Length: 512
Ligand code: SF4
Image (cartoon, rainbow, N blue to C red):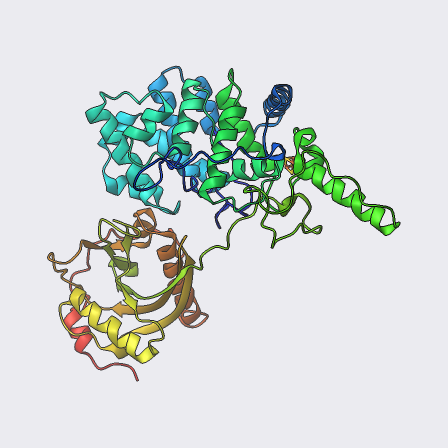
């Protein structure tokens, strides 16, 4: 099973997890638009190929021997090794592969163990509610992954008689959310199909092994890498070979400071050879000797579709990390959202918070959050406060005075493609609120219930900011701060005769 997840880098996102399966996975073999098939591209120069069968055998042997000795002990590996039922084994691999996309191994382990304990089979997962899935997934990010996993499990149970497709091709074709990478990983690890995989770690390793410096996210390069992965994969141990290649990228051939001295395939690495040649050349130049004759396998500069662009020459300070190269990443979109922690006191003074459910599609689909409103960029504080107060009116059922909203501060959260700023307000209430059932689902929760709900990491940060502010305000002489997890009264309960109505609160004179 794959376990890349080293530090982030080219090909990996902020979380340091596996990069998304590369674009262009399914483009291979596509014909040109509107007529005759596109002519086959010329074969790449020898420098970028694995063409010597003896070298391929040696590389496989070295890599597998290293993997047998050095692989990390991970729960999904243990499960896959022990499970004799092919469907259960494929399911165990599948769950790990989906969780590991974009997320580090260290983070995934606990989620994986809890998931497999709760839903050890496809059938168990198929019976779960989306709310349960979101609750378990909360904090793992990229929430649509959990939803799609469950949808696919339901499909296997209802349409495929509970049997997982048995080849990479069928897995990709029949299961929603399963792309070429995930299909290859499941098929090679669970069924022993000799099919390669290409993810962020494999891209990095292969690009270095074969000095591929063209944009590694381009379809042309990705297609070449798939060809290479399929040619290299060990025929007798395909699952282990694929995991070994990814493990190498995660632990040795890491993005920024690869451990080339410890690398089991250094003898086959052309990036390393290139570094040595460049050093030799630099030293000969220093002593006024003639430049060495280029190797017959070296690429000429320019024209080669797999070499670095001529405009980006070799940077000796980067060494092997000259490879791979990626086109500049698109800047994330900036979004500002006003959000309000509506708080009331339950019995015994324990705070309760109003959370509302997001729509069932789009970003953070179906998750719970504090009432929130997307703001226009550069909106003045006074106007954003007013806009939020108007928005909260829907929840309160009556006007909310903007001046009653207390500004807590800003919380930043980076989603894959969005730079999100939450402008956090709070509104303490002394009264109960009758929630309008016509609005989105909503409920009052204690702090414990909030953390057990399907809420995003961003919302947890918002509550933390709110608690921090409250802690400051209730410093010495201002009352004591409650500890997280202290026993609280269940949500929805009220202490009769102790509270004003929300209406009374909203209409009450406000602080200056
Ligand atoms: Fe990566 Fe270095 Fe090994 Fe080459 S020798 S594959 S650059 S770790």
